[in-house]
Image 1 (cartoon, chains in turn brown, blue):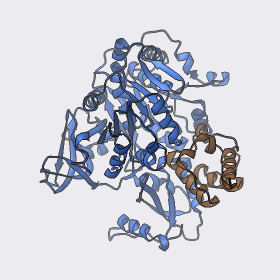
Image 2 (tube, each protein chain N blue to C red; image 1 turned 90 degrees about the vertical axis):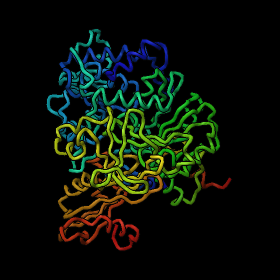
Image 3 (tube, each protein chain N blue to C red; image 1 turned 30 degrees about the horizontal axis):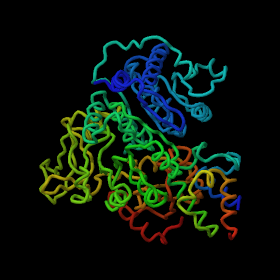
Image 4 (cartoon, chains in turn brown, orange; image 1 turned 60 degrees about the vertical axis):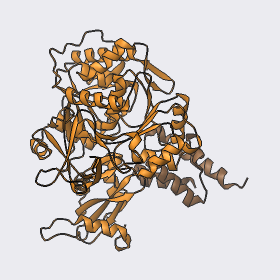
Length: 81
Length: 514
């Protein structure tokens, strides 16, 4: 999952093949790499790719603001409660 | 009136009133004014003289306000630009207006140096850590500037002096600098304050960047009244901004159509209440009127102002009075105070109700021209009137309805973008033979940028490679969302690309290879 998320971000926002320019814990907000419409694209990708429904109230930095947080969030969503 | 007087007058009237809130940080009008004067003094000590340009590449922040008003107080011309502008894009702006100084974060300067795009002889004022080696190469720290205690010596200034140059996408491929004088900006600010009925007790949530004409008008109109700006740069997480609106008991909110689309469709807006919210303003392109009605369901007590303007008009040209939002839905209203709007046919006569013509504007808010571009200026400014290129119709009551654009300009995320600018970047690739860029209707952005590319015989290039090229040369809002490879571009007998045909192809995009 981590690799797929990273690939999407590199392909759509960073346009960089090296993979060095983003650490898993880097904040998207602080790095300024994704804007508000980019975040909608990222959320749509996560929903489609991993078969989860992300609610409006879940669109917060605690869930989405780094590769590590994203992976953790989606992993938790996929576990049936 | 000089634009910086908006700040000094508010500081005299309300020295302890809060000018800007950002997270936990707050700055009063008295403190902001004092720091801006110090910045002006420091700029004078650095040799910046009346009429010289100072580029400001900062995100919405206290530093931005200090820099902007400091430049104006020094007699200089502020040139606000996107704080993450790629080096190649900045180089075009720097080559055009030759800034004497650049006020930026350390990363911005680092990127410019890395790409070898430093403007000649510009001094750097760095808002952030400055290494000793950088000081040796002429960098000055922002903090150090604020320790300057001199008095700005600007000589006699005039309201006809240039105050700000705001860059917009140019039809020739290079960005055009819209020259706005102190008179232009203060006249427009006065009108906006009047129709929005702004007072010192207002506070506005600012998610729009100050470097953008609409963001600049929100900034100036609230500073004029000594009102409070609440800046929040986290709109990618709209719920955080909504929480701040509620917590700060914000009375106003300014957005573009994509802002409101996100609020209505991908945030907790509908489940929250905002009793303090008095007004919401929308500009930057056509918003479906149903969306205004959706907003009113959540904040029925708020006034919704649908507005229209252009950077060339300092920002604002017309507004729809809130009480007319249902009666005149789809209209951008009538001219704001101090502005005259005409809708003229090809012969320069006013159109009859129902007929379509071009919106032509006059008033003290109309720009003085494009920096260093007399031909482009003459193309839109004739007899002191701005020919907007926006085609519209009027009804019997004089309300204006925008129908289309005369030019090929794409309107994406509220930015007017010239396809040529993107096409020229794509043509930098040694594999690209021809490129044509068009807009595709998009629910959030208004239009999404799509590029059609014809490769040279035997050449290869992937969409990813071309997107990378665009990323290195264009700010994010000018990035194509999709690149299509096509064998040839449809053309007229005069070899002009038939962009309408390309738009049709987008509707059946199986015909092209992504």
